[in-house]
Length: 116
Image (cartoon, rainbow, N blue to C red):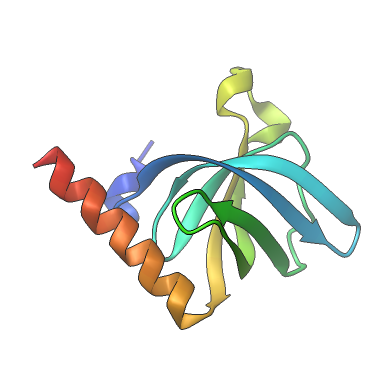
């Protein structure tokens, strides 16, 4: 199986941010476990409908500000997840305000600088 990191256009940064995924069917609670300026992995146990846009709401601990992002479901491993700690969904951002996009760019850049 191909490593997802090889297909991504931006590196992911490990975080631990509480999140809410809002769908037409209801709300799904979870945690953002890694994030980039274009997408995220959200640890959760409910899979949203594939064809509906998602609204993500989470608060970054640095700015104490809510981020509101529109996204689409890229993949899910919930139906066949063997390790409870890795269950969740991958989302691709489709709409994000510029200040929040800049913040996510900075978070990723700072993380990469610390690793160098």
